[in-house]
Image 1 (cartoon, rainbow, N blue to C red):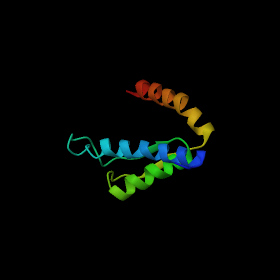
Image 2 (tube, one colour):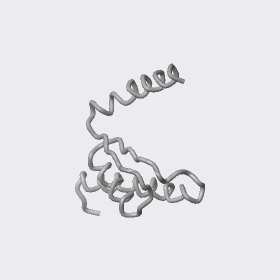
Image 3 (tube, one colour):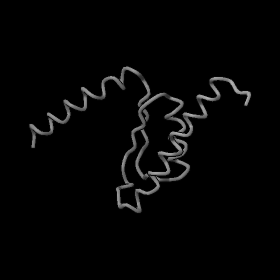
Length: 91
């Protein structure tokens, strides 16, 4: 097959959301909530593919938020840990 490197990479990255969506379709069957927000974390192109598949298949009722900036992704762990500690202190 005569393809360019970036075409092969895009193809492989497109397989990931396809498999993810296949498992997400079972949410209703397994009685997982579908009236929820969705956060897509990763490279912009991968987030765009996931968003397209989620919106096309109408899996979730909530908003879809993309976090693609490297600095924002790096802050997710510390910010999440601080939020957990804050909620424990309140509870």
